[in-house]
Amino acid sequence: MEYTYIALLVVAAVAFLFIAKALVIVPQGFAYTIERFGRYKAVATPGLTFITPFIERVAVRMNMMEQVFDIPSQTVITRDNATTVVDGVVFFRVLDASMAAYQVANLADAILNITMTNIRTVMGSMDLDELLSHREKINNALMKVVDEATDPWGVKVTRVEIKDISPPHDLVESMARQMKAEREKRALVLEAEGKRQAEVLKAEGHKRGLVLEAEGRKESAFLDAEARERAAQAEAKATEMVSAAVKEGDQQALNYFVALKYAESLKDIAAAPNQKVIFMPLEATNLIGSVGGISELLKESGVSVTGPRKK
Image (cartoon, rainbow, N blue to C red; front, side, top):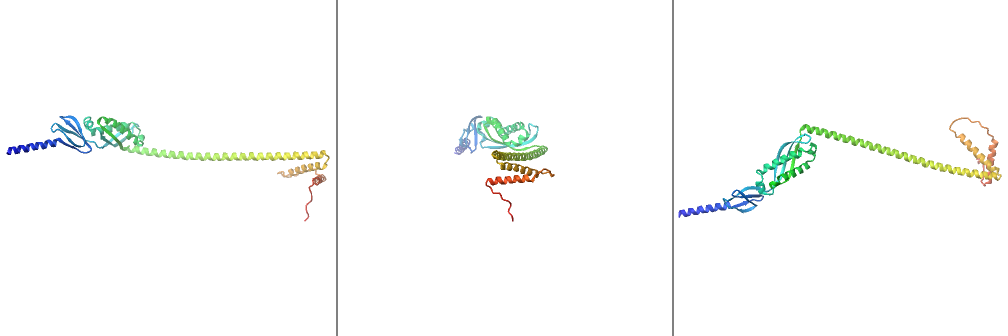
């Protein structure tokens, strides 16, 4: 009886051990590779999975969530022979558990090494100025290269970020001086450009003033010429009328015309700017006779001529 009880206990223990070995619980975010006699059989997804104890086993417990690895600092020599210290991070996730488990021996080390190698390759092909100002371009280039390299491992590289780029101290000081000189140069250029624009505007204004002045002189000359033309026409008309009157035997018109010209000549001589004494023969009786002729002519024309009023 005791042997039967012991045998039942042994059978129960073996059954419990068999069931415990047959049941595999895969947590969310993981995938297990199942091997039979050491050969890959299948991938167990999250949930409850049954395997054959002692024949099949769980080989690799693969994390299928997105993971991040820090990339250690390393020295990079740029295309213009500048030495910099660079570090960063890489984000990836496993898409195929079987490829990640059997295509590469150590997935984490492989990803870190391939990323570090490509950082030296990509950043070493650029100048230091481009390295410091085009970080997004560097990140995209690294992600593309590393993702293509890790694709046979069943891995998807989602991001590669450069955290810090540290040039030597003396090079940083030199770049600061260069930046300061460049800014001063731009300031001088802008100042010179402003002065040039001011001179151009001033010259344009002066030119416009001269054009307006010339146009004014032109208009004034045109008006003067028109006035002279009208005066000449009036004088010609007066001469024609006087000639007609003389032709008809009217001596008074001739006296008026001679007196008018005589008075205009005396006016011009008196208005001369130079100071001098002029001796000329002047007969008062002729001038009075001319004035008298003018008076008679005006009377005949119907115009009253009176002398100055006495007070």
